[in-house]
Amino acid sequence: MQVLIPAAGFATRMRPLSLTKPKSLIPVAGKPIIGHILDQIGDLTERIVLVVGENGEGIVRYVRSRGYDVDFVIQRRDEMFGLAYAVGLAKEKVREDEPLLIILGDTPFRMDLREATDDGDFIAVKAVEDPRRFGVVKLKDGYVVDMVEKPEIPPSNLAIVGIYYFRNVPLLYEAIDYVIRNDIRTKGEYQLTDAMREMIRRGWKARAVEVDEWLDCGTLDQTIVSQRRLLEWNSHYREREGVVVIPPVYIDDSATVERSVIGPNVHIGEGAIVRNAIIRDSIVDAGTLLEDVILENSLVGERAKVRGKAKVLRISDYSHVSEI
Image 1 (cartoon, rainbow, N blue to C red):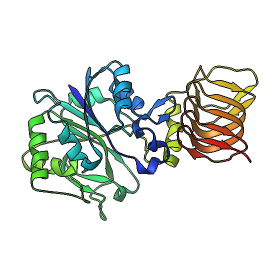
Image 2: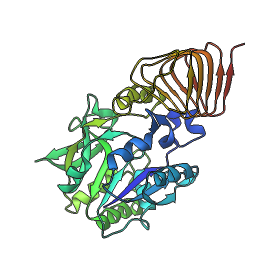
Image 3: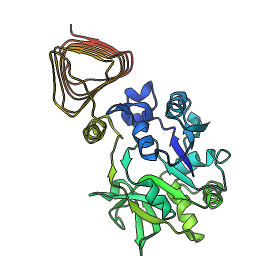
Image 4: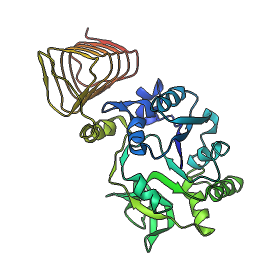
């Protein structure tokens, strides 16, 4: 089996953090977002194909550091035409004679991928309260017979979560070529859902498999909310004198934390320095310095410096904030 991870989007709703690093590398609960996805892949495959943006070298390095054989293609800024187009760019890197698992690179999830792939082609879904915000599947006898993007009248409450499994790779790329060649767009983009609808028209059968967890990291606020759940699986800290910890938290062992109250729901990255601080519901990236601060619902970028009594901060890498 081979895995394809599209991870080239600009994540405008994650600014300012996404101005200096790809969304997939934003740290949440002890590791980059894509790291939680790799945890679910595990040893299911040795080979991963990445579709990354022009600033995506860090994603390639990180995935390789996790022990995978990585191949990749770069999706340029002038090629952001939708998910089907992104998958199409990887055609020359994907093996036609090997099943393909596609997983979006920015949405952590939990499911038994081995069990799901053993039972054949599938589209992963999750029951949601308001399916009008998502792509939604229509089912018949457990198989997907149609898909609709953000429908006003949803055919079900099962949202498509961005995990797909195909045993017939040539059919997938024939359908993508058909969609692009005939300029079939939904909301201005070449959608993978439209390609899969064409596959269904040609006889493809895929089950709807519900994931156990689907965690939204689409906005800064939602990322902080999702981190609390992720910390239940990836919490870590060691006792430090003069520091009160309210779990769940992740505090890297190399971080310096003094005279502070940390938690709940906090990530403090590698080499960070935190002194005289109260921090909750926040993400503090690697190498950052925080002194004499109270932070909540905050995201502080890598190697930033913050001194003073800020309450809520959303700042990118290398920013400086001081109380005047």
